[in-house]
Length: 352
Ligand code: NAD
Ligand code: DAU
Image 1 (cartoon, protein in one colour):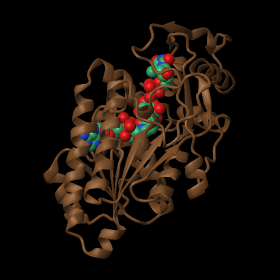
Image 2 (image 1 turned 135 degrees about the vertical axis):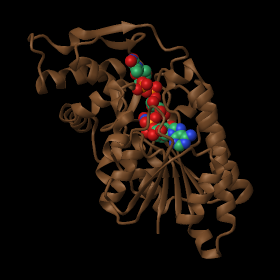
Image 3 (image 1 turned 120 degrees about the vertical axis):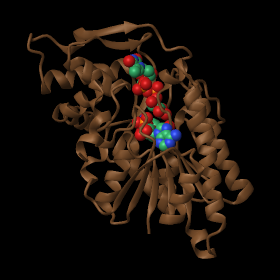
Image 4 (image 1 turned 30 degrees about the vertical axis):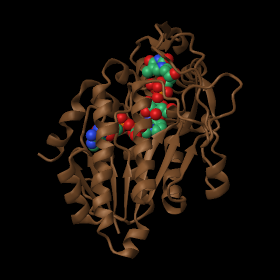
């Protein structure tokens, strides 16, 4: 038995593969295009691991995906591959349309063709799990209930619109062709290997190098934070026991305003690695121009996943965020490689 994981060199995909192989011996075939967000070094500990095969390629490359499916005959395909940064989608939506919509469509087509040729038992056991986001539901008012699986889709950014389109395609492939799909819609993740363009790793990095800590607008936007390993655990559980064609919201019950997240990070850094001038990292906070169309509040109601599949997050925000800060402090080489661009040469050096 084997699984095929796309987007495996990115933040969540890499955490998923590392956790999977620390808990199972079931092999993983990794497919990743290695865009700017894909970092082969994230899977560096698996270089000599016979259970893992890394393939550089695009989910939209139908020939490559078809070949991988027929050669490795995975029992499941887990699709993490995406363009994932909202700000980039505002500056240049094209890549988001290509990967998140066209790429997912081509991946679905290749998987459908492969699946339709399987024997009855393998066909029944096969799964396509699509990893999606809470952003497809739009933005909540201050007193609105958290997003449940019944909320309608109201995406507001090119990123969330492209993810919404991919979710709809996945749904349609189940409804029309009977493809055995599962979809997860998760809130904001944080933890190891998070690319330092996203709020939490950016703030940690900027704090340590003495740069301003940029807060968009008034900093009162709310996100619902989940430690990445809890997300990975939820995905494993949905893959194992999720009802076909269904969607599962995944979240940590950790709603926080951005400014509070940044204050927490500054306070932990003040304890763990104080500034040499004795001042607090909070002094580096700078309010900057807001993100266009900035969603005000996200919150996930993960009751279904808890009730039906027995999943619960293991980390609170307080435990997870301290682990995360400590990971970045102990992995400054990783951060330097990413911020300098050296991570792009890692493969050449590693295999020289
Ligand atoms: P990421 O940007 O860190 O990683 C994405 C990975 O996909 C990269 O390794 C990149 O090289 C790869 N990729 C991009 N285009 C590709 C293509 N055409 N073919 C193959 N590989 C390609 O993203 P992430 O934060 O790890 O997110 C993973 C998934 O989880 C995404 O689908 C995202 O929408 C979803 N998600 C993310 C969060 C979050 O907080 N980060 C929350 C909920 C859902
Ligand atoms: O909700 C899930 C989504 O979370 C995922 O689908 C996306 O892939 C992921 O990138 C994330 O999107 P956000 O836009 O919420 O994450 P980001 O880290 O970019 O921003 C978090 C909040 O912090 C958001 O309100 C914008 C704000 N922000 C962000 C940056 C980078 C700042 O105030 N300053 C910053 O410099």
